Image (cartoon, rainbow over all chains, first blue to last red; front, side, top):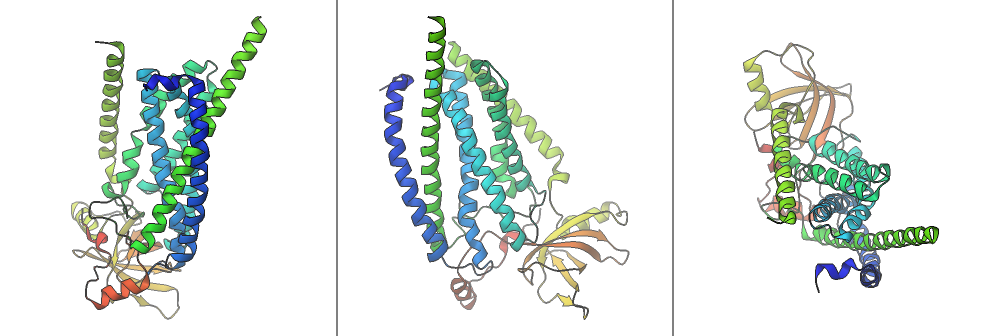
Length: 241
Length: 156
């Protein structure tokens, strides 16, 4: 089965519909389990007390914010280089999802910052670079809307996505490269996780739930986009006949 | 060379150039990107050129053990910030965050007073990346395995 098998919309829609159902069920199950583990089972932190539970939503959101953008950038590169018809669609579909996760990370981070740090917001390297990520998502979506010709829009948006990709490693390593108020990474770090297993497991379940939710939304949005294009083509054919 | 291959090189080349440009800009602006100076940074800066009074800046480090003194008015607090090499005395009038305490990470914003004390107008608590239940923390302390806020001690 080559990459071009799924260039056929019918093949893609059929498979995507099936995967979407499974991913949706998985996301719901994992989210219920994850929230139960995070809010009920996981212990309070020795220092932060119950406030630490914000982490179980904040950290997976922040991971997804970066993951969605990486996905968006790779899909854009594939679209520019191989001109695969689904790549543009995947990139376009992932942007609002990523923007949503970024927004969630910013809001939960702010809610967490006030009781722990003593401030809702500071302009340190981590917080600022994530805010830039949020604006990159919005700019990407705006660019799609601003250009009438969808092929030109796809190309311009893909270039913007690739330029913005420079921000991804900056976000990840901002806490190591500069002095920041935000603490360094707890899970993905050189010496292994600095988080007790009783808290790590709920976090990982939540992260998987968010990932499954992303797949569900992505496939739903891509199918919607395909249907929209089909309707547009039918209307056009109607008018010309 | 096929057109696909050419596109790969063009896009890869542009990404490389752009990443280099971004790296150069960030390196050039490093002074402005750091959120706070460690006591060592500040001591070095003061050696190079004396600060104009009232220049706003942020310092960060650990609150030195046994250094917190609260004034009878209940609002003024004095403590020392250390990065285990240099120490700065800080005076602050206001409400400190809940997790503020000795041995904890802290970031203070303010300016140097004439008497060499850093007068803070805002004090933020900085916590590290370790998370664990209370019982585990206590067990570690009892076993003498406690490492505290180790990430704070890096001096750059």
